[in-house]
Length: 381
Image 1 (spheres, one colour):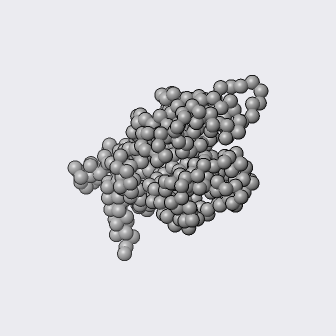
Image 2 (cartoon, one colour):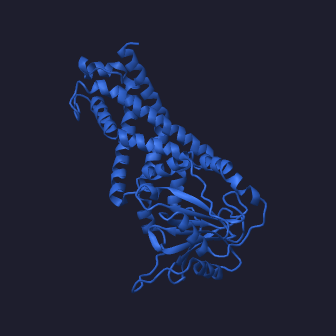
Image 3 (cartoon, one colour):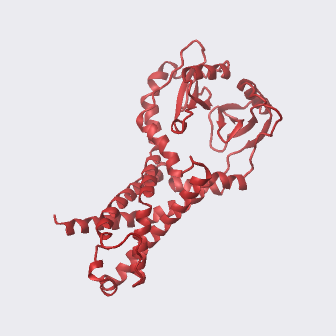
């Protein structure tokens, strides 16, 4: 296969993988832009429940006392989860439901002051603008089929990037980097498309690859739950749901088993497939920049004499957890979010200019190139 023929094949691969995925990628870029700044947007548009400033160094109250206060505020309801938020270190979020089996729209979150045990507010499930944008970005409101389809579009983006680099490399031997020729509108947009595309190549590759990985989150967790947890929980399957004697004691045992861990959340004993009828599922995160992105589950039997179980997290779930912050760029604070937002805008320009160039080529064909480009400029469109 000659070099010219190979280049033409790569050019066709780049063209068609880009065209097939372009509209969906444009939707992902447009919805992804506000999601990068979702925390800042929610602070401005939604009610926030923050713990008040207290004089002195007030220690955190026992978790059991905080949980008791939440149950007294909503007597008769069932506690599902207890969560600690990194951005609100003095609060404890208690997720409750009127029924033992949580139903969509039938649960709520009590935001508690972790020091005074006071109820700061109640967060109810709602579908605001940011929730709709997230669903569009995640699965186009089509649940798992939509997620898998967008994952396929992410893989096409990766192929488009690789093929684009292959096509772009020999072309740039003839021009200095950053050259934008002005001989015609199409030639100018071609150079801008190539320039913006090559500048964002690494970012686009990372975002496309991590986005494709994220679409497999549900199948990955279902596979892990189906392969790892059943052997551990088989003796307890079908048993009545037990009540833990003390969350504080369970937390202390987990911290002894994982001394470098940081408490993230607790799943109460349940008969549902995300937990165990006899175990607290205590999720821990690390303290370093890398391990803070990875959550490790531990199983604590309500019988405190049974050793703590730490199921091994497989490599694919570790990869999934590390891919999420890389996809949204929310692990480096506002400066990194601004960089992610600017790169997202550049990506939108790349997609629009690519569509314009394809339409112009279909409309005018090779005659435009022959009139506007010198022979040395000729290359696969």
